[in-house]
Image (cartoon, rainbow, N blue to C red; front, side):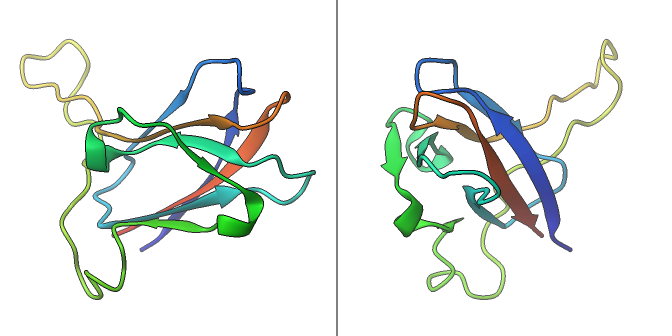
Length: 116
């Protein structure tokens, strides 16, 4: 079942905002929210270990990971949510799915969907 979240992002001089798993998604879909003027996104993704900053303009959205043409039904699990209680011996933190920030001088909002 898809989970939609609206996430506030910093401007292009601010820190990247880490987006953590809340379920066990196989497909991620994200785009800049269009409620205000769009500026584009700077995104670091899991496919290269969060190393490369990719810039997406308004016209190139929404972005889907992985490519749904390659994994049409059920691709690999991209992350899992936090498990156990903080401080317990078996605690496991949630996996990072994406790091993002605005491509403009002011912050923006990211529309983020996790599909299981």
